[in-house]
Structure formats: C-alpha cells, structure tokens
Length: 60
Image 1: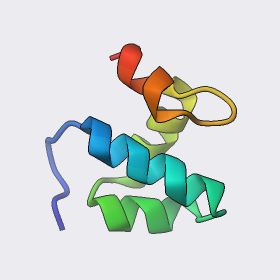
Image 2: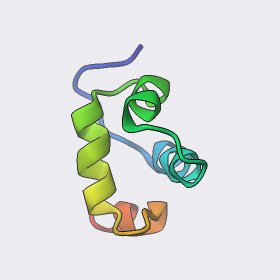
Image 3: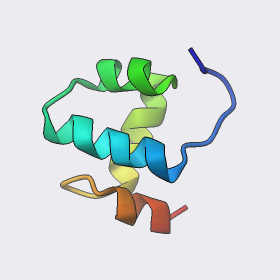
C-alpha cells in the first residue's frame, strides 16, 4: 500500500477511469491505486462527468 504523500500520475488516472467505467466503488479504487479515498473523490471532481483521465491530467 502506497498511502501517504504521493501524486497521481497519468497511468493512475487511466486506471481510475477504467475502474470507474466498470462501476467500481471509490474505496476499491483507492485500495487498488494505494491512496486515501478522499484523493479519489477529489480526482473524480477534477476529471469531470463522466471522469476522463485526459481532462484530469490537463487540470493539474
């Protein structure tokens, strides 16, 4: 588990996008990526509706 101070990279964002499309819950995505669930919630806000990794990457 990589929880702590770390930034999401583009590969993480693509993984979030794929998991979100498959209907995964936020807590499952957070555990898979290795970040706190609040990080995923913030990322989902950043990436728009529906979540897109490219949009989130541009807003960083």
